[in-house]
Amino acid sequence: MKLPRFYPILDVATVSRRGWNVVEAAEQILDAGAAILQFRYKEHFSRRAFADLMRVSELCTRANALLVVNDRADIARLAGAGLHLGQDDLLPSEARAIAGDRAVIGYSTHNESQLRAALAEPADYLALGPIFGTASKENPDPDVGIEGLRRLRTIADRPLVAIGGITRANALQVIEAGADSVAVIGDVFPADGNIRERVKEWLKLLGV
Image (cartoon, rainbow, N blue to C red):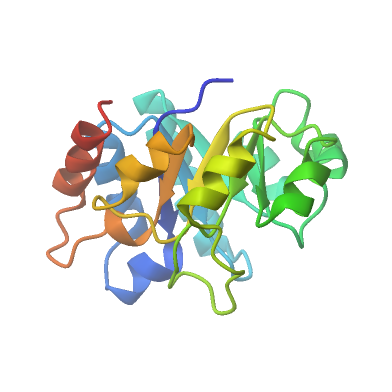
């Protein structure tokens, strides 16, 4: 598959902390032209959270953008979405039975051994990180760094998403080092709440 170069992550916790509406934030991201959007929700999937996800799914369909749900193969199947799995989740080979044969599945890795193991899994793309320090995880893995990314890119046999501490200031370095796409959480959400303009900045920067 060919991944969009810009991969925004709608982290529900981040959006909620700032007092913003999750669906409205998604709408701004998609209106600006994003072609993929991950709905990242780490808590218990309440009815309200699922309702928000289904509204975001509708927005993605309207925008012809790929929706990806983190961790939960069952929720991804219900939402008609792709699935992104971490090292503590089901293996892609296990999740595929739930998400379906046609679902796009991504799989996070954090070092060379995990990346090599991931090559045996039926994932459509792999993620590697954190490239830089990140504030989105309580106990992050050691930084991969630009040179680590450059080296490990040669191992990956499918699209590679870089994640972790990526901003507009360092994103081009990450692409130059071999990443097919950059996944971004914090630098999608400016303090002034103008997410639409921020996403446009990202798309222009990456030549999308």
